[in-house]
Length: 153
Image 1 (cartoon, one colour):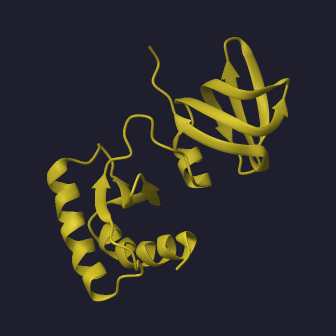
Image 2: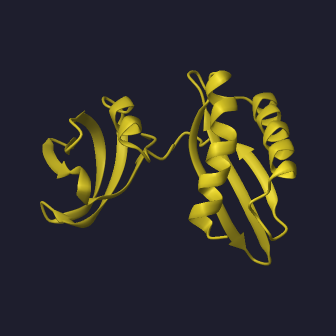
Image 3: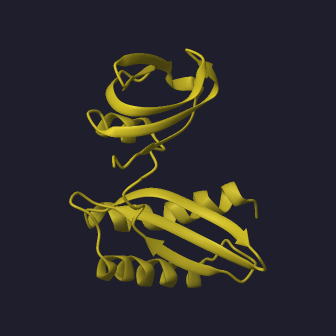
């Protein structure tokens, strides 16, 4: 089964449980590192998620995967927080990050750069407005390659 199909099946399995328990699915990865495969599920909630909650979600998902596992290879299941530099995968994630410090990369240069780190001023679904230093940049959302929260030192 393809990686995108595995991610889709796992998302269908876990989303109802997460939603009914106040959690949010941030991302799913299925990757090979060295000789091992890893199925990683990143989950969060308002105020953050703790290790006991990750354990509960892991137990639930493990039971579901035992019933209908879309992965034919042996793998390790990991359920964790996305961390302080949480990826902003969906438009809804970007909307929630308005006012926060972000790091954005683009597929092609905008205002002469492909990397922007600064305050996310606004997002209207079509365009991201980021203030880097004293300069504001309007970035078409379709040209955003990746976005994540960034820690300010």
